[in-house]
Length: 150
Image (cartoon, rainbow, N blue to C red; front, side, top):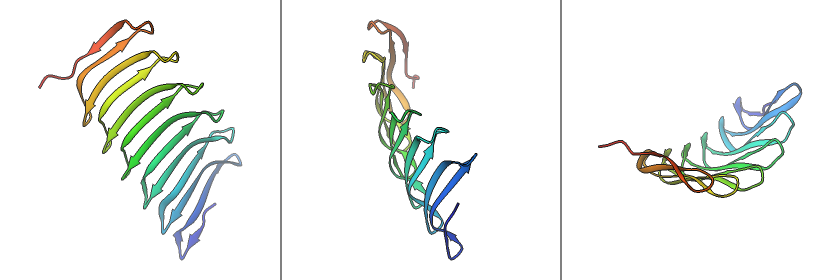
């Protein structure tokens, strides 16, 4: 179902599969503008993106079928920009990362469900600049990926 003003998509548009909504998008003057909400088959919210003039802008939220937060991302001008957080089902942080203009930039940390550090590395403009270290849950280093030479 779509809304139009003078032949241009304007307002909310909802898409359906098997009589259930799969996504609801908001348009202004033919461009995505405002929230776009995507649904799991169960009807719970799967993801919410914010748009401005057809581009992703601001925080995007992803949810499990049970409605728990799974991931938070930030966008600027349709590119990942800012902090990214991942979560386990119980709400424990699984990942912390940062992006700049769509490229990974800063410290990456991944965690076990226990909260113990699983992986640590540093990126600059999408390139690994310090070794990416992987640890066992008891804290022993088990792998190291070195940045490319050069």
